[in-house]
Image (cartoon, rainbow, N blue to C red):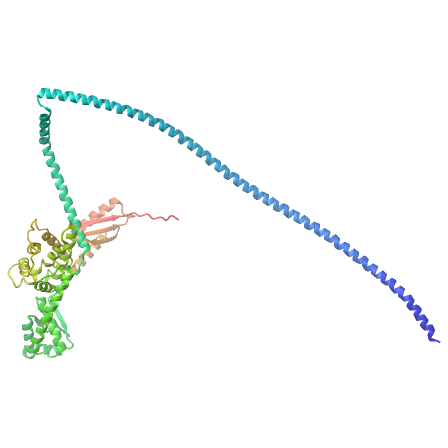
Length: 521
């Protein structure tokens, strides 16, 4: 009973609390709504302000961009207007130039027409004068014929005879002048052919000696070579015809002879005996005989090789053997076989240049000194001996025989191949190594010539050419003028005459060159 009032009170309080809570909630919602609305209004106003600022910034940027584009457009337009103006000026100049050329052409056309008119008047005047002259000449001829009482044929005959008499001396002088000109041209052509042949062919020449050395393994061999009481060395020298020199020189034995074939046989036989070790008289004679047979075969091979190198036709075996023997013969320190091959090639080159038979010319040159292989066995000089041997062994060509016998004597005008052989022989004899001038002496003479020319001021380089017959001097264009080059050339020539010894004459040529180089890029 006591609880019921409490429950009624609690229920009444609850009933009162519900509306009150609802009213309170409504008040809170309205307050939040008002606050949100004010926030929305604030955000909206701020967004409007931001948008207005952005719009103003964009408008400013757009105005600046538009201003820049307008300025660029104005500049481009100014450039284009400048180009158009320049084109207008060029067109105006071209028009003025064309007008001027047109006026000049008009004036030239007037001048040409005037000149043509004057030329036609002169032509008419000349034609008239020619007709008058023809009439006058005819009248004078008629009067002359009437006075002389000669017909036309007789008058022409007398006139021609008189002209022939007056012009005979002039014709003779002209013929003499033409003959001298032709002779000079022929000499110049001959020099060109000789120089061309010399330049196209070159051969090395070395001086041969009259002794050969044979190496031995030990000095004990020297006693065995000499033998008991000199028996072995006497037998060897008698069989070979050479002198064997056994001295105190260690490891060497000297074989000496003026006949190169004998010296070579002796050298080879002595080498075989030393290698074999059996050195006694019977063995010496056996080895020497065997070596002589090998040397004969070797000489034939050398002769056949010479025929092949010279490019000539077949030849008798005896002549081939004589050519091979020339390999072991020297003349003025020059190997005769090499000299003969050189003469053959030079003759062939010159004959080809002159339109002659090159093979025949080479044959003449190859055989021209064949007599030197047997001149110690027959009487007479080597030209006569060579011609007799060539004729004896089947050489029938008159050109070859005459070239052999006549290449050192006066040349007959009817034998051109003999003249070629004589010229080629002289060329080959002037090579370094010939005429007792050793290669060392020749090189030393060229070096002295170049050193002398290089010692002058303004000279950069000096080269001895044409076998020492000419010195080519290269001058510094910055240091020497043209007149200075002439002076230096004369001074070099005078210094060569005073300080050097040389055969013949030496040509001095000074070359001064100024060269400009530029590159187009």
